[in-house]
Image (tube, rainbow, N blue to C red; front, side, top):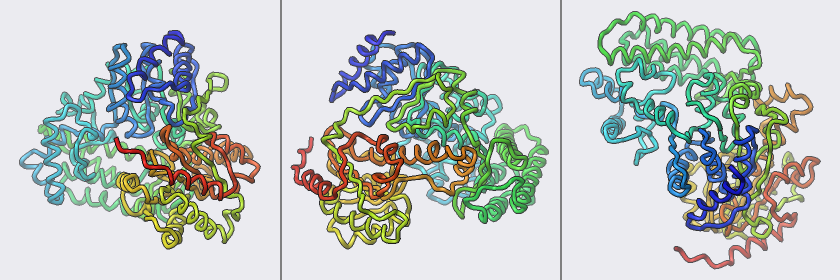
Length: 632
């Protein structure tokens, strides 16, 4: 497969797009991916917004005739590949290939659970615990299970409540597998696995890929190439999936499962109460790294709740039945109990190279045991097994080291972005601002915000590194501007983004959850304001342990790359199409003064830079004065 072959195929595909245009970065990326597949050398690609990275890695992968797994950071991107990109490629590439989407079991409706809730005797008793509205939803899901081809929750045209969906689905910890389930022959999750086994392109999310790595390669089919899309999230997601968690919610799930097969309050009630026992033991240590052995309160709690599970296991083993549904309920209960016991055993015994800490909130704290490094796990589970392509709009400078890519065995390229950042955008750094640690800093931020929002005529996404800073800014600025200000507290994320997009004069104040994954093209967004360089919290338990391990190198390997990546992601909210124009304003003077400033600036798009607010205001007023484009 020559570079010319790849370029020709790519041109054929992109030429069929409604707004076809030449994208040199996409071509460079596609050729580099083809070379990686051919040579077996791993590839790390920084592909800026607008590059078309999805087509850039899919075209050479399919042309090579290899089996490829695409692991996305989010289910939304997974669904986009399935609904848009892969069908388009199938239509225009002129090379036949099959593709499939594979998700975790809890994403598919479980036909055994459907059968159980339909059972006139036991099902009626089970449904009695639900509210009337939830029962209606469950009945709708049961009816849908007879019409759907995939059983995938994403295929629903309505959004059931979590409680309703959980009533007709099972997680991987609960499912006994097709061979031990009475409805295994019509299991949607198993059908999805069968389709994936026969496909050339398999789309999963990184969490599922992490489970595949953690299981020793038992979940996904054999494949030659893996593409990690949005690879800047790889280390954190792998830490989550390879590690272990003990939380009250797991006992709630186990209790619900046991109630379907055990009618013994002496066994079930202690497990229901275990959720509170876990919470009470963990809350005093919230946000803290734990010593080894654990504090007595946590150690005693783990031993206690493990004993409660063992009593339930004994009761389950004593059940003898010839009824298929009852057998299935028994096996699922045993499966859940065993997985939870295994997690508790790991927590009690401890593991070398892992760190324990308490995360979450006061209502739902969880004990996490996470690896200090994921490099060795990924080296054994991925890098030594197959070729990998890691791509994202923003690639942290330390990514290769942090995820254990073998030195000298991978290539790294930056194909840039097709957008004209130099002429269409401006980076304003408020160098005159006081230090972020100064008592005067918040008031100065509010002054800057009011002036910039006025110049922009609204059209502002203001991003804050804390809820407290967001709330204070919204309260202070509302009385000083004439445009509406919404905050992240007002609506769910999707509804909030829609409301902001539909009102050109509005402003949206939000926190770290909006730094990435928010796409608002056009004049609605002309100004992105970021209050501080988003360094990770110094007291983050897992990162603290990693910092201690690295010593003096920690700032350069952990804090600086993460801050640069997050700031670049936040900056990337501004320019989403070739016609977008606007200003990114960073209120943190360290961006222009600190000795590490160029490491951060180099990670940002190549925008024209200024330290003069008047210049930023003039550019915003120019954009505001432009006539609105006629609607299509």
